Amino acid sequence: MENIQHRHDISNEVWELLKPLLPGQAGQWGGIAEDNRRFINAVFWILRTGAPWRDLPPSYGNWNSVAKRFRRWVKEGIWEKVLEALTVEPDYEWLMIDASHVKVHPHAAGAKGGNQDMERTKGG
Image (cartoon, rainbow, N blue to C red; front, side, top):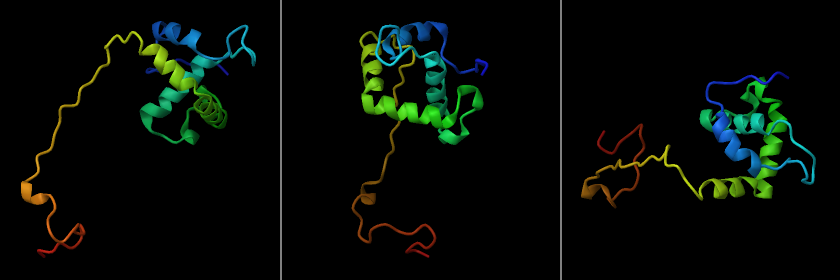
């Protein structure tokens, strides 16, 4: 299938960082993977959208094959190895700090009566 570039697919610069960390390289057991980049983009698409595997666009490959490969990489610890290698020298380009907080009245914690149903409150 033709390799279609989607708007949010990883850039060439990021791919050059990831490529040597992934399985399927020449000289490794298991043969050479021709579609590691497409697979990574497919996984990122799933993570970004939150869609089920069955909704993966066909341009990323067969959803079932991608899902099985993802699970295999999880079991083999490949994702952890990749993240460890990439976090050695972080560039902080996408660092986000969540400083949001919620204030609750002191009486809201531990009140008698437990949780109230949304449909019927104790007050009416």
